Length: 192
Image (cartoon, rainbow, N blue to C red; front, side, top):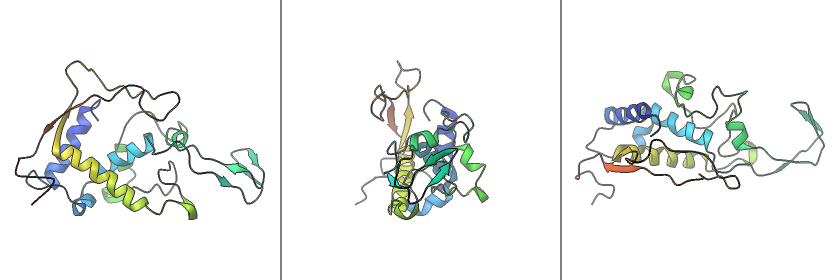
């Protein structure tokens, strides 16, 4: 979002309009924050928690996308590849939360990807039981970071480089950003 300041501004404006600056964002605010939810969903699409799903074993011979899969074969899904597939996503490497808003009914953004164009928490009967909690934590963390701080690039940095390490699913270079408090001192993360 720092590379696209208009998106950061839009997220801050939504938080200010829905929550205000005199109280911290609460879980009850989240359903009224479609843009924040769309941003969280876009983060999970581009940067999944792990590159692959846990392996599954095919229970019958099958053909998928023209490939024959023998019964008993290990099947692994690339979460990274699915979320960045150019046949599924227009401009797949571009961070664009709007793509999730355009599909939402009444601006509702479902963090679970039911049509499985990307997978964050696995799926099916062995899918992650914590998908609801995990999604809520991601949205709340993002909302609190955006509400609590004004974010900017350091003076000597033009843009954040999201190039990934060739071996590990992490950034190749450190993330450099500046955070300045945006809320009054009376609004505390740890109320007494």
